[in-house]
Image 1 (cartoon, rainbow, N blue to C red):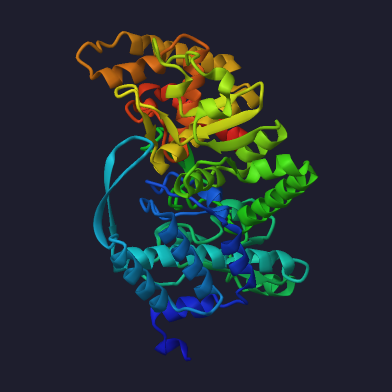
Image 2: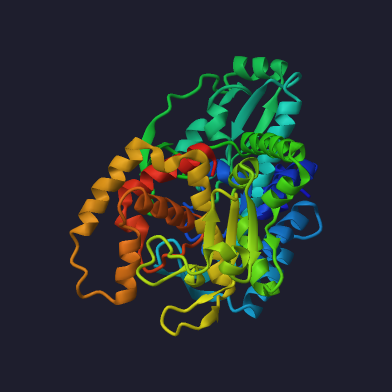
Length: 480
């Protein structure tokens, strides 16, 4: 098809044509589905292992979107096909148009809109990242004969000013510039690259048709409005795009291989416990599946940490049935008269167990109640946070202790006399004296950051802002 007769979309597809194997491998490497409530919840390289659509809380719809994009890149679907299918699915499931959703980390009610423009952006962003990763892998494979990479824009009025300055820039493949500036470099960015041989480099350079010196990098501050974290971002690149999808995919592939090798080296019972909870008799399929899915959605290194430490995750009917020796004994921080019959989640450090129960006594009615699946999902995140704290000794970090104690003292000065009794009890639970209070704060903040916590009555991210920021850095450093 002559260039003059192509639509912009066809031109993009033509310029980015390649065997889909590398692009498809990138998409398939993102095996983890992650519900998020802000585009900032997953940052840069994290997209190499996780697929998400902001404020879409339904994992089944996320999975359908992911599989459809994979089919499109492999040549089975066009963008028009994918958009048609997703529009039909979203309408059927009640997600088409504007919908209110609740961020489980903050309790905030947010609005999200799914329309044709949104679907186009989702499709283009994901496929362009995939093709970018594929082009990088091809460039690495051809570096012996084509050791340079050239930056190319669309040469029209829509090209960003900074990207115009990079047009024609030709640098060695191992130049640091490509770690942060490999396109796409923003939402709807249409820039691309091409590999250049030594002979072609010398010819273009002699003709003055390329730029051969890396530009001075100018940085600016970007504030994550959700976490308050300040990140340095290169000028000209949209926040969240300052990374190379191909390098990120290579790194994730190495980590995945290493994780599998480590898991394979573990005894079978421990390996199985790291990948999937053990379900006891008397638990409903809906509850056990919800807990299993929530656990599987946690980072691999979190589950691997539990496996190495010898923990098993069990979904049970009642805590006191799984641990009868605890019957009638008081629970730490629960208040007078509340025993383990009232508890539905527990970390047993000595026994190396994480227990999630479907049933517990109701403090008001004193009757056994059946927890909804969502409660099980929140509980497994919270108890995993406890286990990671015990394994990595997070609550012994003196800097963390100091920050938490300072914020706790400020919270204890609050006047809670007019509060609902339930809110007051939960507030007291997370302001207990050290170490209990910090341990519970760590566990529930981990749960909030991973999709939703048990202490939904208190927004710990706001109550402990400095503690939250420090903990996020600790979790990120440990890849948890």
